Length: 250
Image (cartoon, rainbow, N blue to C red; front, side):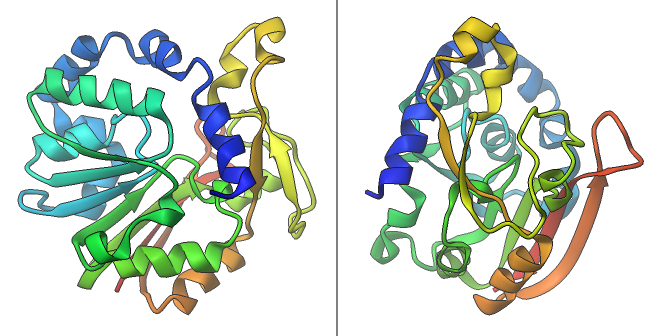
């Protein structure tokens, strides 16, 4: 396993389970909300999935299961790929409380076994700041296509590359030259919710932040057909771009 993957695993296992309890509540609390309205749990992504029943979904870096569990409640068969044991613990407790099953594969996404999972999925789905953890975007997108059956879909939603030059989402991330291709160290996502003294103790992540052109070209280069590119406004300032979602077919 590459050094940067080990580094990111350490960051995502630092107090992560305790954070999810504080941020989401006990798994039983969140499960009750998701069971009551799974479509609301999917938020904007519901429109990209359409009918979920019977779909086989690979949730890449699926974290604490907040999107995997609503998909399962709607009838999808969901496999989560993530490298954090703390994330897995919360996600499986959440699924159990919601009365659904998740297949949660723990490990480096880039080491997914193609003999087992190649062509296994109807949909590959990722959201909420995933791409910057992968230093070779071409290899990542090639793997995503390999996971899909012919005609399968990739739903890739992430922070807008505009956030490289202006922190429009308020994530307290460092800004940089838009075209800077450096690998940088940065805080893991929820460090900002902690007091400064505790925040300073968090392990750092190893990140490669991409331009929109790099993302789109990696998708096209992997052999996908691009169907939609939607840009979404920032959470607190709708005049600025905050996120994007790409729908592509294998």
